Every structure is written in C-alpha cells, then in structure tokens.
Amino acid sequence: MPAMTSETIDQERRTLLGVAATGLAAVSAASLFPAATAAAASGAADIRPFTVNIPDADIVDLRRRLAHTRLPEQETVADKTQGVQLKTIKQLLTHWEKNYDWRKVETRINSVPNFITEIDGLDIHFLHIRSKHDDALPLIVTHGWPGSIV
Image 1 (tube, rainbow, N blue to C red):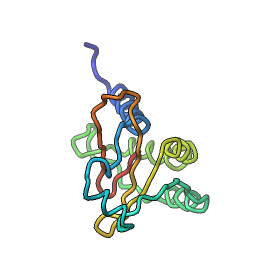
Image 2: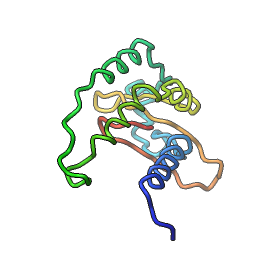
Image 3: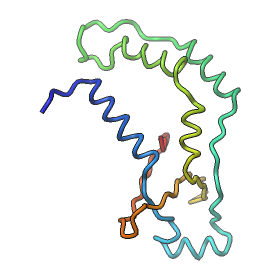
C-alpha cells in the first residue's frame, strides 16, 4: 500500500466530496415519513424548488473581506503540534480569495434537484436524486449548522 501524503488525502477527500455532492441517492422525505406526507398535503410543510443564486455583490464582498484578513503570528515550532501552520492558512486564504470558482460550484449544485422545506420553523435545504438502480437503498445525507451540502 503506498504511503498516504497530505496531497493524496486531500485528493481523496475532494473525490469523496464531489461524489457526495453530485451523486447522493435519496428518496423524498415524504415517502419515508407518512406524517410528512399528510402535512405537505395540507399545506403545512410545503416542499419548494430551490436554486442557488449567489449575488455578485456577495462574492465581491467576501473576496474583499478575505483580502483584509488579519493573520496570526508565525507558529513557534516547525511542525504541526501547535495546529494548522500559517503557510497552510495563507494558501487556503489565497485559494478562497483569488481562485475559488463560485459560479462553477453554483452550477454544480444547481445541476441536481434542490428543494427547501420548513421543519420546526427552519428552512431545510435538500437535494432529491433518485438512484439509477430500482432496488437501491434510500440514502439521506445531512449536514449540521453551519454546514454545507458541498
């Protein structure tokens, strides 16, 4: 088995996240929870289509804030015992500020069916993607706050 490097782990993580973001197979919550079906039929819990549409002004503002980020001092050790190293933080910051393609991610998310429904007073965003296989096991992938389906 080849040695795992941080680049290998990062690539495997990206692959896993990409597969999860574009290929999760799920059935609707209404088919899993009959009570939800009754609530939706009465109009109490409507399921509404959703499209990700990040305003240009928000992206400009985020990049402005990233450009003005106050970074911590250089760590006092040469290894990772004090946490994420400043060099890594700077690389990540540069990536988000200058290289991250928000429109590409927006397009990727919008390439699958997106919906919102209200549960306990909160809007819950979900994707509904049917499996290509008739006998597939339904799968629900969720995230917590402040999480992301990406």
